[in-house]
Amino acid sequence: MAAVEIVNVKKSYGAVETIHGVSVEVPDGAFVVLVGPSGCGKSTLLRMIAGLEDITSGDIRIGDRVINDVEPKHRDIAMVFQNYALYPHMTIAQNMGFSLRLAGKPKAEIDERVKDAARILGLADYLERYPRQLSGGQRQRVAMGRAIVRDPQVFLFDEPLSNLDAKLRVQMRAELKELHARLKTTTIYVTHDQIEAMTMADRIVVMRDGIVEQVGAPLELYDRPANRFVAGFIGSPSMNFVEGTVVGKDAKAVFRTKGGAEFPLPEGLDPSLAGRNLVMGFRPEHIIVSGEPEAVEGTVSLVEPTGAETHFTASVGGDTIIGVLRDRITIAAGETLRFVPRLDGVHLFDAETEMRVN
Image (cartoon, rainbow, N blue to C red; front, side):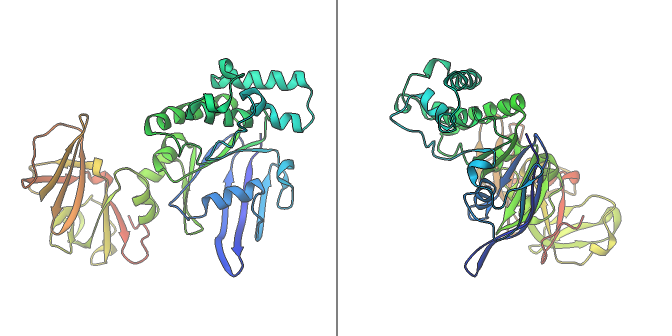
């Protein structure tokens, strides 16, 4: 195992720069997830760590080595791709041991490593089968087994679950997390799915347009997003945003939206925020149905009962608000609903810079 350090790394294709000076530290044994929308540069960064893409400038270190010019096969990494990339004419055992055979390892050692990996992944009964005889989840386990047998310093995962159905993705997320807890190998995992990031990572790196927007533990990003982009990207359903200004002072301050609705605010806000163009954010799950005077009134346009929760969409002063209620309530489209955001869940962002201000 080893730490990975990415220092001011840039990537250009001709005159077009796609990665703009990214710096990230991955501690030894950590599970770090690179997350962001399609085209943000996360897969390119992973491929540069693997040696599949050249680095335009900056350094990447694995342990004490700068690996910028080290051949991929000598970087002591193992990569698992989105498509399983299994050899259809080889058995599962042959697929898992293929890299070891290329490296000239003794047959007895290969067999032992393959059997150990198969036992960990629940594949011991499938070693003599062929990939076509396995389900998608089992094939992905084989791809992971092929990486495990190499006993690398670093695992790299490039959206390995995106080809699986929703139920199987949930199962494989849990299995990957258990696998990491057992092996404790430094892992860098790329996904566009922020639920995967939240449930699996020790640390999350949120990227957009080739830069790092924020790095932190999952709940740190959820509770204290650094800017509006991170706030909107982390969490499902996405955070609600309304534009407006802070009006009043201290305990009497409210957030008045452009449509005239007034949302309550927590006490102790910086007085300099009054009058500035701001964006208020609050999560759908932080909405509380209330009959108190400070509650806002919304006209419900959609209700989606899921069993455990009730999701609703409402219009408040021209803004669309999505709510997630843990309790079952009887509401219908066209009715009015009074609610407030939880005050400890209110986020304020500058309307121009989009940076957090509270």
